[in-house]
Image 1 (spheres, rainbow over the protein chains, first blue to last red):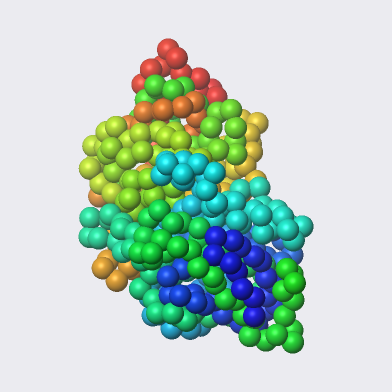
Image 2: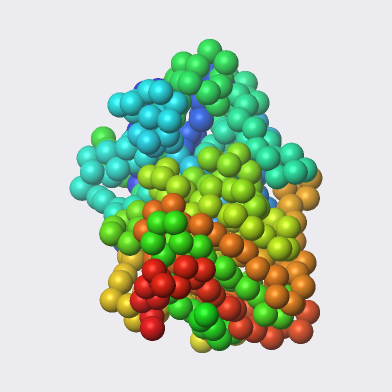
Length: 204
Length: 204
């Protein structure tokens, strides 16, 4: 079990066949998530290809999470919250916090690159993130709203790896909008690899 | 006036204040579109940031088209089709055509990189495209459908540049699904820079 402190990030590796369980301890925490091929950082989980292959604008149990090369990286095998996880909105960035009047604020974008760098990896850009537990309903006119997670404490999503991947998770530091709950206090994520004897948590 | 042959692509530069007009001659042609800062290819038009800043899942007249650094690159100033232009689905790729039983088919992804290379530019990945004239309605359950453009011959969209940019346009070669019309025959796009005395079409 790995604990990712609210506002921070970490990376884990998963071998094909292993399961990843991501839990929101409080029920009020979004996990921005990225995946990269373990052997080739130019192959990454792509939200635009996920929407295409699932013909769906969100992610829910049963969805395939595919790469920019259309290979299935992960599959969503269980979702205790039975919700629609957001694929639409950008990970937060330093520029977004400047817009919100909070220059210098931590961001999921910086968290991605920090987690990669800590493990000797890098990506020259920021892929769109899968925003696990993020509640962004879309109205008939195409407009989006940003609501607190519709989760209970301990809600979790399980992913099965269909190839060897590095997964980065960021406990989103957003504390200005209510996307991490009305208390606007980022909280911890719990990350488990369910076949620990085979796991290689590269950050241990 | 530049003509982009159906299934092919080209690039133009726009200086701040210039207008770009993109026309579907037949009313049945999608234009996959990308933009990059003229001075820095690491700054590119980002669909996930566009959805965030407009709080909207499609693009329509009045929308800002922003970069991964949240700067407005272009603004949609006119849309004769008054439609919802798709931001959700990936540009087509060689792997997608393999799925569809058409290996070796031309793709918008290859078209992007070919157009850049012809002009001495490169991008190490493929940003999500703005899919001009592409008709992808989203149902209440979040599912998407792929329909022919809801356009008339000569329908056009105008963009005003708010910074100096390189724009790549691909006349989408998709001829298996009906996204380019029921005839499934890609057709030409017409591209005009409306202040021609100041224009620098880098592909001339």
